[in-house]
Image (cartoon, rainbow, N blue to C red; front, side):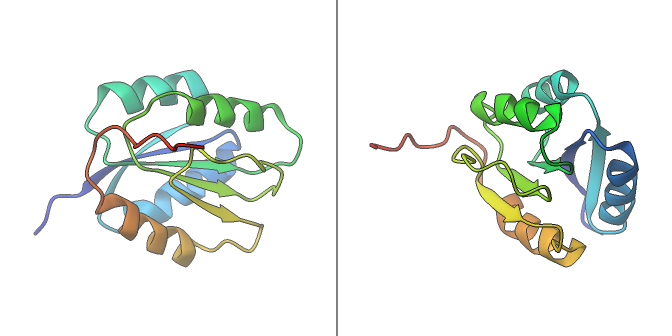
Length: 128
């Protein structure tokens, strides 16, 4: 049996966080579910997290700004942004973005398969 991949899941909506964490734990992921952005950044920097998932659930809420702060920090981990609210337009720091309320767990799992295969390390800086 292969070891589970360490995954950080951040969402300010505790109900959505709990449901998503449960579904991810049914797959080969060891999930650390956090609803506080400061704790999420600290865990991403300090632990053996393979990939991060940031979920923005409600349009116009404070969590959107907190997600931008997380993305702008140098995380050295592939990050999947699930923007269910659809209002986080400048998501240039995320490695992959899924938009819209119709984003299913199948979409998230497919994106995680791609991102978790990437190696850790600093992201290349763009010339633009």
